[in-house]
Image (cartoon, rainbow, N blue to C red; front, side, top):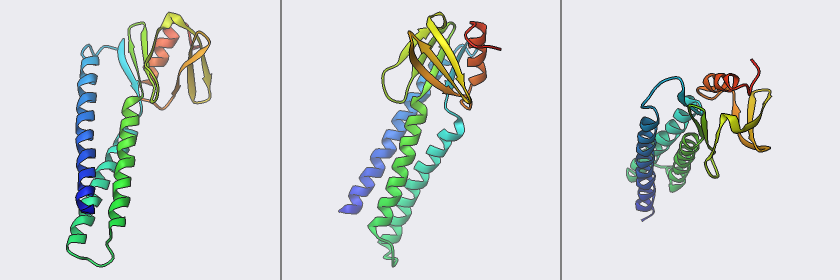
Amino acid sequence: MKMIRMFFYVFAMSVFYLIYSTMIRKNTEQINRDGNSINYIVKMPAALKWTGNLMFFFGVFLVILFAVLKLKKVAGISLGHMYIALVFAAIGLVIFVVVNRWKIIVNGDHIECHPVFGKVKSADFSELDHVSVNGDTVSLKKNGKTLIIVDKEVDNYEKLADSLRKNGLMKA
């Protein structure tokens, strides 16, 4: 009975992964139709996304492997092994969702910030009060409140910095 529940969890997480990745792909294709340098997406590094994917798939593989070994009655394999593999897969799934949730969509002079938690915030470059550079992070502020904090390691950071310089918000 516990093995059936374990496979239900793996199946549910896999279905969620497929639906969520399909939604992300369709949304990204809709945004990237133009493909010019004015319209772009600043997002987490792809290596982090693939780390989450790898953790998820490896965790699912381990759950299946441990289930087969348990059914073959290999000594030393217990449900605890399967639970640990399931938690590993769940952590990978959470990383995948978080990495794909955070992004900044820049369309002309309009910027739309999608934080991991909270509502989508948007502004025009002309509405930004202050841009502060602190080491490896850039903080965008609107009406004295931080709109979003961007690390220099994100994908398309150079395009965002060029847009900020072009609008006179960041020093060259």
